[in-house]
Image (cartoon, rainbow over all chains, first blue to last red; front, side, top):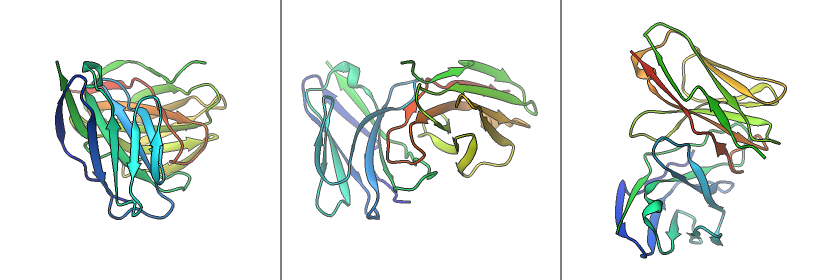
Length: 111
Length: 114
């Protein structure tokens, strides 16, 4: 399974755009890249998923370069409520394979 | 449509005891996965159930066992509890057995082993 590396923590201010980059050098051809968000004492929540190029939804954008060895989660105009841990996951297209969570990136948003 | 629910929310046990945690999957989902999350760590995969059969297992000892019922709800059983079993136990449901589709997590059960 591909291993991911992301910053342990990031700080930002309200209204700024936040970009969290994840490295996954050993990503396989059939791997998808998924980002989850987790607040304290809650289960992780799906944010966005992609395979290549750019994906955008109402919450975030996901940028994946052509070599797919990294990806960047972009959160536009963050607010205090975006303070959470963000996990980057890479998983193959195979039933029963576990979602492998690292330690994630703790994002702290200040006013 | 109801989301994933878990019970109990909190639990205190002593070392050597047994515990059963319960999970009701989101309506329409037939796959349930269980994760253990220690403080300050990401969730660690325990196992997954698809249509009442175990469909994958992480690096956890056999004293961690599970069941899935015909209504797709699930139980996680842990025997001979150890202090290191203290953690947040998360249940996640999805519509298909496979990792690339989204998994919807419940709020978790906080287990403390004394």
